[in-house]
Amino acid sequence: MEFELPENMLCSKTHECVYKENDEYVIGITDFAVEQLGDIVFVELPEVGTEFSQGDIFGAIESVKAASEIYAPVSFKVKTINEEAIEKPELLNQNPYRDGWLIKAELTDPSELDTLMEYEDYKSEAN
Image (cartoon, rainbow, N blue to C red; front, side):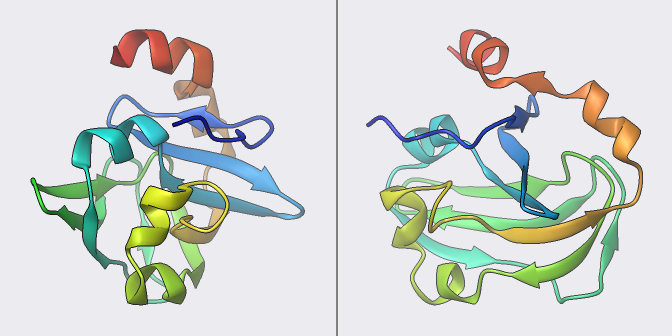
């Protein structure tokens, strides 16, 4: 399935993504991760205000096929969580970027964005 990609989206090797939307950074998982997981049935996210360092586990996703931890692509503080994705995890399957985003965050070290890959590089490495 093809999704409209957010502008300037960067990806981690562990299949998370981050992109700027208005004045906020949005963190989620990539469409490749969604395809690999299959039908998503459960999403666990942290509380607003929690801080994470790059590489920390900040949540979990379960599908009918597997359970997977979600890693922080960059260091951040949680500003908003997508409550709707917790209530309706299938939103991630429908569109991981538009309705299936996970967290809106304040980056605590924006220079870490330089350690991430542009989507095209990520996609060729992921396949």
